[in-house]
Amino acid sequence: MPLLLARIDDRLIHGQVVHGWGGPLRPTWIGIVSDSLRADPTRADLYLFAAPEGAKAAALSIAETLADRTQSLILAERSILLFPGIEEALRLREGGFPLEEVNVGGLHHAPGKSALLPYVY
Image (cartoon, rainbow, N blue to C red; front, side):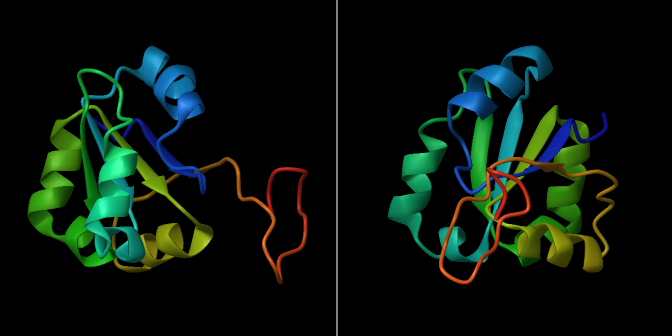
């Protein structure tokens, strides 16, 4: 089974992912790829708690996501990968992950960023 969706969205697991994407795609596994989130288990648990019913969810570092075991899991499940920013998706691709397409969602304003679209900074 191919990866159903790879999405950059700094909101990670939230309503649009759960209902807008989760409903039609019916994922069985969601991975949040973020070294900083993986290093903060309490913060990670808040996001993982919001996973849609029937889907397992995990916070993963870049290195964990690149591991053969994780890549096999992603391809065996109906998977969604979420990234908090462009850097994580790029690092995963540069590390050899077969990331062919990435959906760009909300990347909100922060100091030092400029607008590309009203919802992408």
